[in-house]
Length: 222
Image (cartoon, rainbow, N blue to C red; front, top):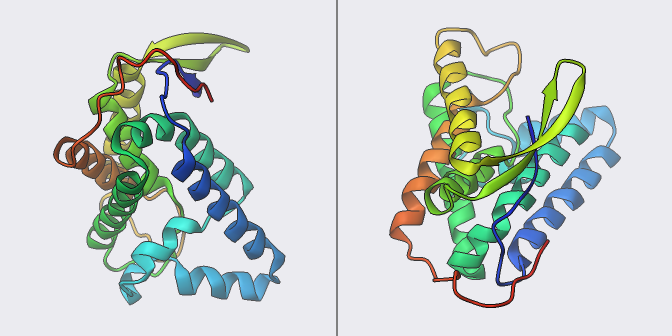
């Protein structure tokens, strides 16, 4: 299932979401401009390596990606869900929220995979936090979703509580299923970073305070 857009209107422009996406794209373009050796060094220096952990990488890893599809997928999810969370938090508080979710996601990954020597990169932990917040605040919002049916595709409007709940359960069971497997010599999905980010987002959105955006007559549609 691929989410295409949501039906929840935004009442302010997603300025910070757009800036975050732009930064990720610029960093990735710089990354792919490097030769293979320099790319590996770049990823190893600024990505999270739990066995050789540096605190600063909890932040820098949020702006690195392992390939075009990794980047596009993450930025697409951020664009779909981020505007509404930015709308109810405000631009500055949303940026703090996003960074805190990313830090929490990285910290959970380090704790669970303490012996791993594989660099972990990506914004998905922070974006998972945005998705967790969206589930808390907009559970009844509809997500227009591309759904495969055998060899055909159709679109359905699915309530956020179902599509985001399904996504979280997928991360949860895959994460626990990966416990005990070696991550020292091969990469993979940082399931527990997703779990940690999602939980952090759901918690933070309840304590940071949000704005009432539901009674205004006009909306920006993105």
